[in-house]
Image (cartoon, rainbow, N blue to C red):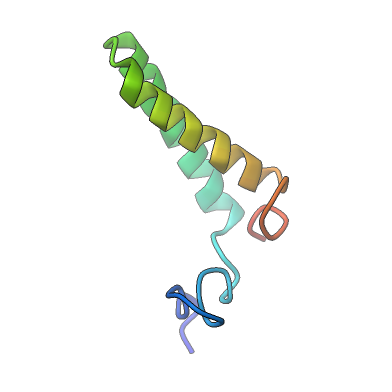
Length: 72
């Protein structure tokens, strides 16, 4: 079975194939942080809040606060 298989709903759903890698989580964290900074610079505070929350989520996943130990 392909390593990405099983990302749907149910017992074979998200995370059953191992979840996102630490590399992906770090890239998503950095990307969300950059987008947040750009949105703040442009004074688009509502959108910046959403991307800041996404950055926090990816940071929590990356550092293993929740999820499967940071997506290993």
